[in-house]
Length: 404
Image (tube, rainbow, N blue to C red):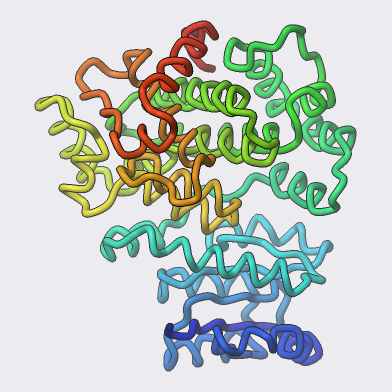
């Protein structure tokens, strides 16, 4: 297996030396390069093709945001990380566009290695280089919202406080209103009214609230797209219903809380690739959806035919760059796959069949062909009888309410 090239940039020699020592165990997998300035980093990259760059934010001369922006334009295929201290929040605004992920100093070896490996692995989903280059150069690629990052930091402590998470949400009045509107809707089917972010976190869990924040942010990011190939509100409703269906299936199958959360997050975000493609490959998407409507075909089938990839792969690429759990990224990537999951019933199966059930029960678009049940995957999860039980339970949920 070919080694990956990783470039670390920091003007502090002690920081670079510490990274060398900390990452010594990765020498079998990575060729690591070190630069003490932005200019030196660009010179190295002119000679050596990099897979990822991890840059400090505060450096004399060319600072981190400027360096990462240069890399975005000159080397769009490179995964870009910002390594920042807690005092660097004022620089976040400048570095949003060119950065895929933020890591906070000090960053331990396990977290850094995992973040880099998962982000670099995400590129394998986008096999069409022309599409990859186009997406990689996007100035306004949605970035993780601040509340999501702060909640993730709270989760990393191992015993997250619902009170603290609720306070993070409550700081944003608009976000609080949207979350309370959602959690009190038919999508969640709660027995009692939720009146505060803290209550929402306690009842639904930190991971569910975090994923709702991310979904709200992603859809809002694409509201200003002038011409769209599909209805944004219908897609939002579909994703919310599908996530509710996933929760139902996970409960019926007795999945662990971790797997159930992964399934919920994946279904909530399973069509994010459609948003990305439609906003930045507009002419291609117009052709795709024209073919879908005129000949009653499935979107993913036509995408594969005309682009050489699907929205599932593009969505997985984005979520992988963001550092979402590998189980979520995999589930999004495979939600149209015909192949049974080798490890047995898992979040990817829930995502696949929750999506199929939503298209079967609700008319998403009368001009689209409904996705077909995949025989191999159906047999692997227990056959038609199990799917019928899931369907009956979903119908009983009464998810006909339109989303927000």
